[in-house]
Image (cartoon, rainbow, N blue to C red):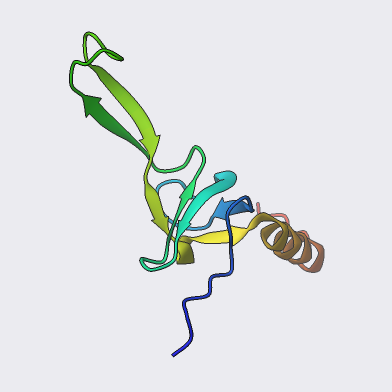
Length: 96
């Protein structure tokens, strides 16, 4: 059986196509091929509560990216090309 091969890799510019962050763009920070998930900058932000430490003397609430399933992202170039093709072929219809 072949290894998991994904349509995206680290550093690619992607668009989220489904979910709560639909339409957001960002670069892929890392890819987890075994779980078929990606981490995208600025997408799926989650709050992490941190205990008191030397770095955070009063504790803190940090925001960090959570993973997204790879099927929920599309390369930005492909997304833009598909969108341009759709708008070019559809005739402008005025609804009254």
